Length: 164
Image (cartoon, rainbow, N blue to C red):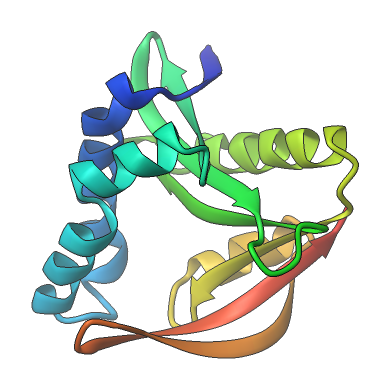
């Protein structure tokens, strides 16, 4: 049994803990540990996540299993094109992977996106991340490749889109 709710600033530390536990398992096979540490500190600082929630720059949703938060997603309209919504983050604790929570969260984001009348959902995924196959099963297709500098490192991504 699970529940989903919109996260608040009171959930920031929980979000950071889920990200930290998930990133090491997900990215250790494809990124150096220095890059993982740098990106976690850069993307998942308390200040950054708090500001994203407070300013509604991104909406975070938290999935709990038996009242324990185990997964989250974050989404928003794209800055340069508000007709496209972007799934910025989607992470499930390793102990819950395979339970369908990623699918549940994507479907929740899709529902919320269509509820506001938008018809395209987009995401970035590292070109070497096994999650690409999961996103394809969810109906996303590669639109183009993108390389994004984060400090001294690069995110080598596919941008994937799904028509809703």
